[in-house]
Length: 69
Image (cartoon, rainbow, N blue to C red):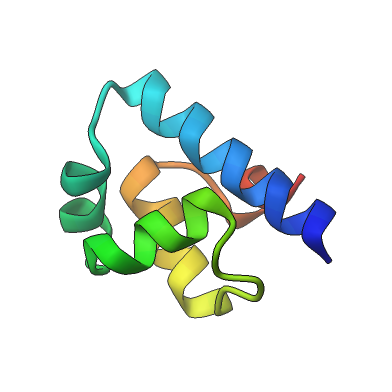
C-alpha cells in the first residue's frame, strides 16, 4: 500500500506544482483541511478516503485516476 500512497502523494504534488498553488491554496480549493492535505501529500496518511481524493482531484481539475496512476 505504501507504493500506492507514494504514487498519490507524488501525483498530488506534481499537479499542484503544475497549477502553481500552495498546499494552503489547494486545501481551500478542494474543501479539505490543510492538515489533511499535508498528511496525504507527505504519505503520513496511509489510506486516504476516496471522498477526500475526489475533492482534491476537483481542486486540481484532474480525475481521481490521474492521482492514483
